[in-house]
Length: 49
Length: 350
Image: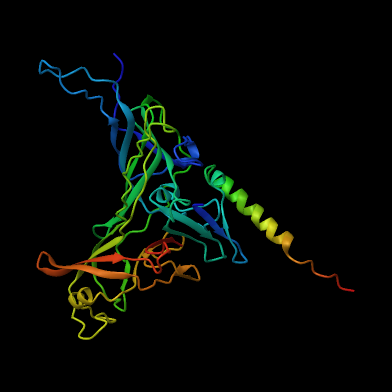
């Protein structure tokens, strides 16, 4: 993997080579998906009573 | 009478390949702005078709050639994005830098956005490109292409990023120059080397005349496969070792009188070279955020800025001169921090 991105939580995510080979717009799309995944993995905040 | 083909207009593009040696045709979004007309060195063949001489002493009729390959020399400027870096907004020429044996790491903490380039660990991270030169109404396409990089500042000018590129070569065809959309804005001027900051170990007072970063990549090793190659017997190239060196010409200085032979305002290159004390190196070109770039030893970052490590040895010192001004020409060999690391040099855009 020749390209990697550092996510806001410090996780380093390698970008698949087929995504890299599609250019910058595809890499931005991959990064946005990683951010969505990160948000989905965050523990839910309990609702206040 | 038709108009002649001319060398007046040209274009260049490079696109990263998904699979080595499989053409990934550059589009209008893959153009790389060069400083000058690329020098095209094509075509070459692994087998030039020579069949020796006849019993009568004449030359024999040549056979068809095999193993077509070619090369270019291209000069780029180090142009930052000019605004905050993101996954899609990169330093200009990112694909070409990667083709020189670098990986690219983007980090986007607000206000500290940066792209860090480090030597690639072989073979999984090596990046090849399909590379197009449009010149004289013709398309010269290389694929499975790798490059070597020299970054040279010969004075207070915009430094040259010199790429020496080789690859398998496609047939030369007539083609119009694409209208590239990826060139940087005209107003996005690159940084000049007229106010660089240089650090050699503890020594920060260097009056630098010029510098030259050489990756010295041994990459022109053809793979001469007779099967599972291209239909014409060339399977591309295999990069070997690199030997990263940074050459700097500085004005001579008061000599440091004690180990480690470098101090805040003095330097003793003769003793530093003899005793091979490791020193950190850092050169920073420009100060404008999102345009500036740095060369440094190690790969450490602190808040998106270089945090160099002592990973250079002064291998050679020469007494030189610029007119009546006495100078030293210093050649540093850069080395990795551990046996398995690829952190001998970093190039950072921030």
